[in-house]
Length: 97
Image (tube, rainbow, N blue to C red; front, side, top):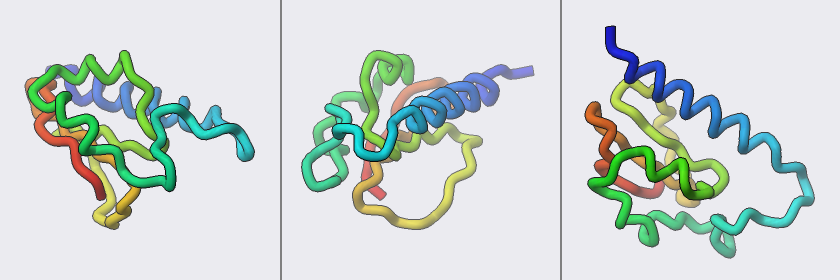
């Protein structure tokens, strides 16, 4: 039995828990860009790297890490950054939406 879906789920739950720690009125996180625009262009160097690199950075609020089995809504949000990960745990795409 593959543990990849469990690892992905664990990462998403951990990221979601961290996002909730910020209280209304707190200063913006350093990873957020001014005006709430999507910073995907600044993170194209992640493409081809293992998903583990995300453990070393502070992701912007609302970022989705999408594994092959991760369900995701289809709504488009121009300020939201998405990180797609393939079944070998490599980042394949960093994009807005």
